[in-house]
Length: 92
Image (cartoon, rainbow, N blue to C red; front, side, top):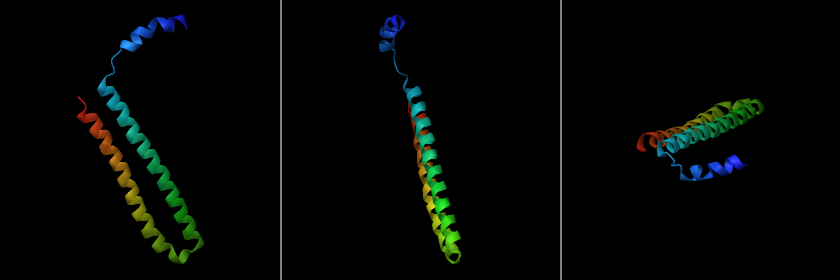
């Protein structure tokens, strides 16, 4: 505990590198974005397959709706990638 107290002035005066914080933010943006999209896609596919198994005659309509939903989910992941790239390349 005494060692921690002796380092406190050094920790309080340390400067935070904006480039490092931008890299951390970019990693969080793409990581959480991909995690959310992956969970959403898994949930959508699971429910679409379950609905197709229950009523096989409407599987074509379900497949069309599923592909549309997947396209919109992928666009969210692409937005997260754009935010991550902006964070990395615009911070000086």
